[in-house]
Length: 121
Ligand code: HEM
Image (cartoon, rainbow, N blue to C red):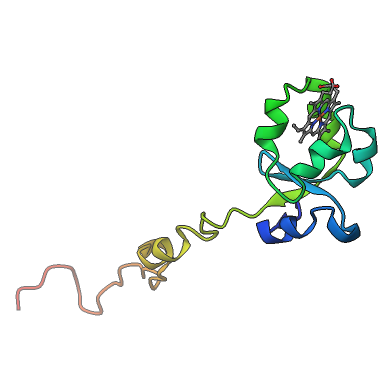
């Protein structure tokens, strides 16, 4: 459901040339443009990590849990994890699964047209 962003997309939104200020924190993308002026640590610190992964800088500043909660208000999506293939096991699983093959329905054993089950011929 969440919007997925490429790292390059996030990098473009670095606050330069009137662009919004996006940061990454623990794999999530935040648009903190409107928060810059309210940041107790000053706008400059956030601008240093604009368009980048701010996880280390954020944690390094020893923010309170309130600050972490504040962050939620600005979430706009998640970073795409390209290193993980999306349809990991689908093709091999489908290929080697005999369960997917349709076998003709087993017919009930037909009564032989001859007289019985034992045949001496
Ligand atoms: C972008 C998301 C950020 C949010 C929502 C945020 C929020 C806050 C909040 C609420 C405080 C007040 C103290 C607290 O509750 O911990 C604070 C203080 C502070 N923040 Fe951030 N912060 C963000 C990013 C950063 C970044 C990237 C840095 C870079 C190192 C930073 C550095 C600081 C510093 C140094 C203070 C202490 C300011 C002081 O006590 O004078 N913050 N931040």
